[in-house]
Length: 94
Image (cartoon, rainbow, N blue to C red; front, side, top):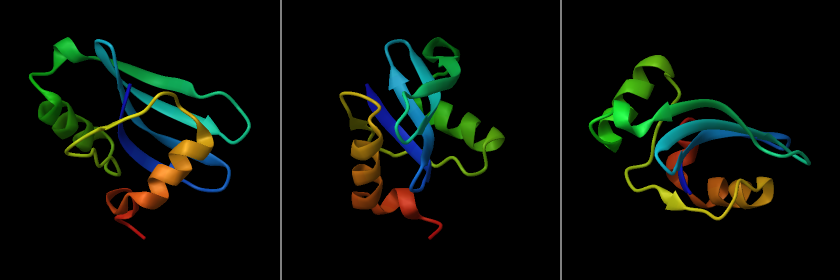
């Protein structure tokens, strides 16, 4: 799985976008809980990753997808928090 974006990251909640086999997905995760997929988007509906990023940007004004997604093993709250803190692009509005 690839992490495309973290839109919100605070002490109890994270949401963003990931790439899975054959689809992109919006996810959210609360500290101490399993991640949930809020929406799925078939990759076949988009010409490329850049096309998907452009379309999502029109509907989610806070979405900012990474140019180079980050490979991750799982949607783990602590690991995503560490990635958020280590990746300045995620914190563009701070």
